Length: 419
Image (tube, rainbow, N blue to C red; front, side, top):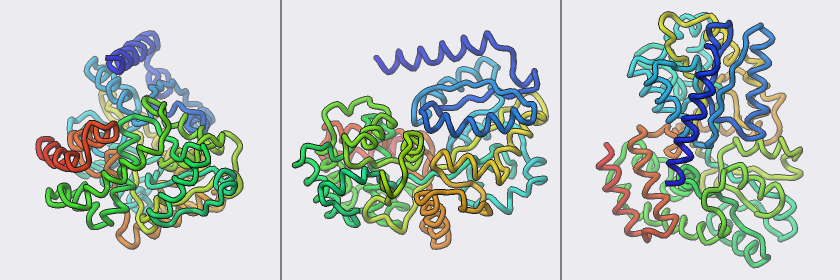
């Protein structure tokens, strides 16, 4: 009930703000709906605002809090139903495809041709930015989701090296727990539990098994022994989070690591923006590494801005926004702050810190070796109906509603029904 009221309140507030504001596009500007509301995310978004303002294009901000974007999509559906779509909306994966197939998005082909997007944007991203031959969104970045973040001083004080295997990680958690430190900083929200499960499942199943389970939806893998082992590992992680994790936002969990209250957080590389915003330095204050057992794989999502049809051809303001997003200078400046890596393949890593350089190198290597996979947890492996069905089972298991054997059975059933 509480989550329903929060969502309803978000919709009412968003619509009331919009009702009192003239169309940004009608006044030579853009109205942008997004969920980048944490400190690091807001700092990164400001790079784009300033870029457009430098071109004389105004920006009407429409933030809807919620790290996974679920509430933002709820607000968006209400806006579109009311015939009042924003100029541009942050979107992920299959959500973009769904809106495009409904005919709601503007055609950006002219902008893409002029800027040569086909040559510089990886095919894995184009799958979600280009629908039926039409560019409908502008990729901002590539986030990889199978990262672990650690407080270096906490690890050093407890004699813990970066864990390379699951057994190493289990030993590290045990050491921290014995020292009275929360081993894992976690926020109890379904998308966060799915993010952790993403890394755990990849480490257990390997790339072929991950693809079979979450992209091909192969019931023999979804219901196999490897999946039970993944749920068993999730149960152990659950034993190593604090008692107050339920409902905690992801950035508050990151703060626990920043402040030395917890040793590790399993989260996408947007977490790095929080460390940087707090003045922390990679390699000195915090560490970044792939979830043990996934050093050669990258699971990704890519933030993009969908351009909604405003009643005709793409507007000059939408074209300017799309051009600004894909400019090499913006791709570098934004992603340095955001913690992600550029959506373009031709951007130098010179301005990036150690974690950023590693992220860019890992992405290039994974793309080359065939180990780059759309993240199940972030809507890049399967449609929303399937993703949400997996969410339900993963979070129910994490909260003790199912044991691992039951979770496997429920997962097979849920995915079958959702297709």
